[in-house]
Image 1 (cartoon, one colour):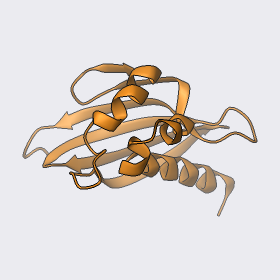
Image 2 (image 1 turned 60 degrees about the horizontal axis):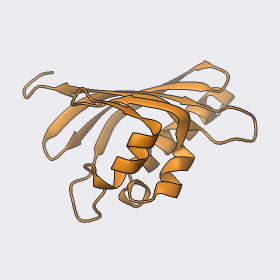
Image 3 (image 1 turned 45 degrees about the horizontal axis):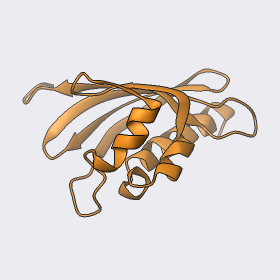
Image 4 (image 1 turned 60 degrees about the vertical axis):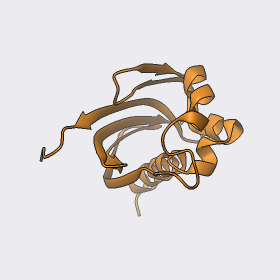
Length: 128
């Protein structure tokens, strides 16, 4: 595997961890995966900051161990520049589909990949 594949793979692993209820319930685990400059535009159209997202994650969809979970598909990524990966994928949760785009960045050689930006666009029922 080349360098690019490894970096994309690390970003995908981080993305999947953020969908894990145990991570969503833990501020300390979630904090490791979110860049301090993180911003999200959610499927609702709401804009979330780093602090807002950390505070709300335990209450949001996908946080309950016995509740609905995000089911990702078509996860793909591209290394845009050293330390910057763009991921695209789809999720389904409780029958609702969304197309998603994430930017993951790694600030320095020893640091971990963190989600810098995330956008979710709802997919209407029946859309291809």
